[in-house]
Length: 142
Image (cartoon, rainbow, N blue to C red; front, side, top):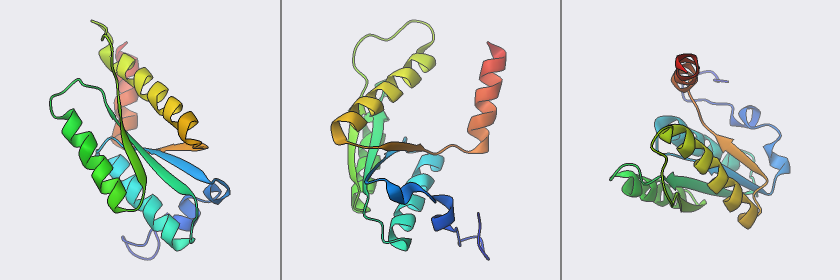
């Protein structure tokens, strides 16, 4: 996916096929992987003169005191790139066990509902190899 140098991502190839959508949602946590996704989508839109509306969703699970500030920072950054953005909040009781799994389920439920409200046709997520390795290890541990 890299072009001739480390800064030359071929974003047209990376996001080939997305130009058929008019509304694209991004799941952005504020981590390096999802922020990189947002930057690459912004480059892609400029490179292909994209007309799709980009909507960024950042979920505040309410599990850490700093989460609200992080989600607000994602929204601010997304808006500075010209994207629509909003914080989605997980409300209600939390389970005593399996909080991470419940948070993941809630996150995708919230984003699915937001997509339906906003007319977003596809959701993009960014994950790096470490995320995948962590998922495999977590599943193996269960």
